[in-house]
Image 1: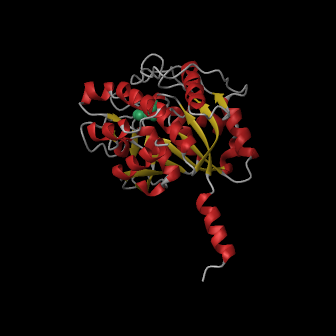
Image 2: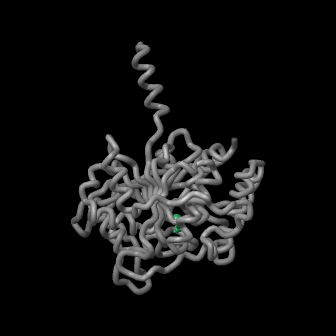
Image 3: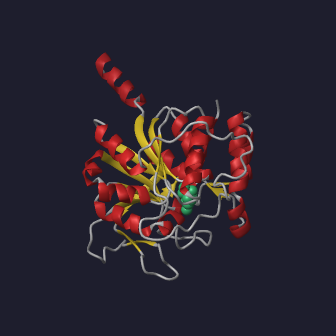
Length: 323
Ligand code: RIB
Ligand code: CA
């Protein structure tokens, strides 16, 4: 029989939230992931860092501040990060509009400010101060994480796992592009992360392009009759334009799926692989290439997500958005 002490311990373990640091480039899908991180009892958002990607760093930072203040998480520290990739000019993502968060009329400007520390030093300080290794979630180009590893190599043992939305490996359908933006935008940073030995879970387009927002999902989102529900629907309606016009499909919830893996890891199936990133290609520049047959003779440097339970993901997302 389970003793009271054991039951207490099991209960505590079951509800003790995972303390995370979240590096992002909001961005509409990053924004929804931020909302999930704040509202989930299974996640404690210790800090947010911003990188360029979907928009310039000033915009992704002001977007992160606006979103956090709007959802009542204005107490979460935000540290601004790299204003361009580590080794090449910034090529902006094109899905989120000039502000990086177009289409959200109800979202006031932020009154809070970022901390003075650069994101890289903020991440190092938080990781070194934490008694236990932490989960880091990243849903933008890896410029901050790559620079963190170069400048503060001693934090590596304090990163329990890096969950990154990025890369693409199987490319099984014509709506999956040969390269994925977060990898393409800063491939040298990705190379540093892959070489670092950090425990890396890559959540790529192979699974994120299976969590598309179509009519059935809009119907569910529209049932959430709150200020937050309205903002999320407005975000989704703007965010889907790129996909709808170019591929005829709904917007993909890339970053929310990556964040959801902190809450419910079994949402995806994964497999180990050695991942290389193409730094010289023409048509495949920035591509992430998995060595499934171990031809390179290198040990795996990442777990990649191969399948996803899309319905279970959406149910989790709806539950986190409802009051
Ligand atoms: O390729 C998808 C990624 O690019 C997502 O993180 C999205 O926010 C964009 O940054
Ligand atoms: Ca992103």
